[in-house]
Image (cartoon, rainbow, N blue to C red; front, top):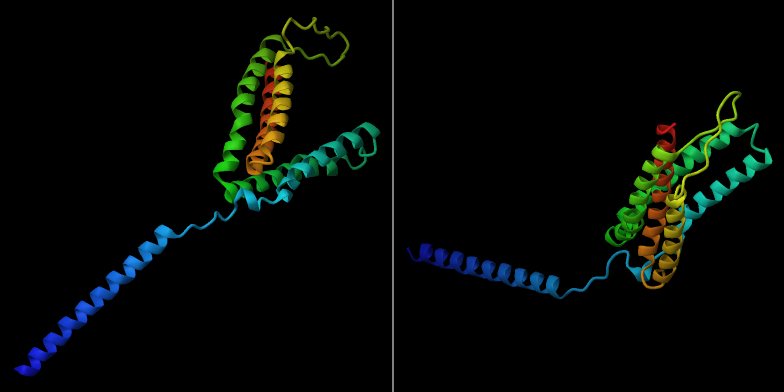
Length: 208
């Protein structure tokens, strides 16, 4: 009987010690989690300027295509260069965009949304402007020439270029304080330019 009582007392004491240990450990972990101040994995201070590399590669590819087209040097290999520019470069920039979203998340997406919030309404304006006032003239025999441009026809393009100039100034002012925000704006401007070009050409062909 005494052995059984002693075993029960030992088990109770063990359970109490185990419960106390678990309580103390949980309290220690909670305390460390509350007091720990861990810096973000990709903070502004750790920004890598080479993240702008895809932007510069895209711009350099565009300049190269214009130079080859104007000089006639790319006529023999036109299909090859076209595939590189119209397929390879967009896919490369799209992949880098996805990587930047995963890397910087919120600050990058905020910068990305700023240009789009202005360029998308301008693109819609350009689309309706081209549908109503756009005209194409290819110079075919018997084809009538386009009438003079109506007043305000170039307003969407002017707004587009003025807004991009404003983005350039604003991004340069933001770079020292928040380069991730500037990087997002750079990708936003490129995306906005593609949207504006597509909306303009679709509207022009739609009104033809």
